[in-house]
Length: 77
Image (cartoon, rainbow, N blue to C red; front, side):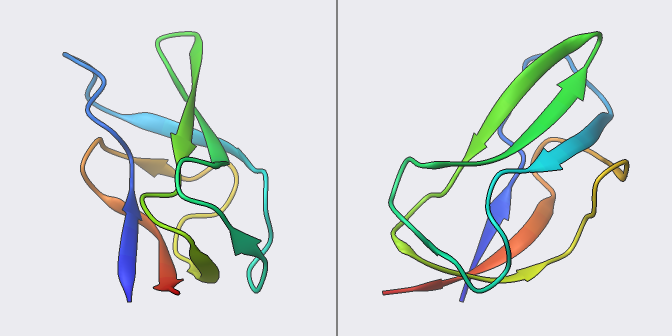
């Protein structure tokens, strides 16, 4: 298992998860956009670090998190 984390967005503290672009159980490719987060009125894409299956969503839409924190689990393969 591997975590999908919010990337470093500079001096941004908190971000809001806007929406998931894939559902739990779906296959994703490395670098594929899987979610959108909003910080300071700008929307950023979160990408899958490796190919695999989105195993579990940890932070749902509207949830608040920080760069570096896990928002989902990915089963590599």
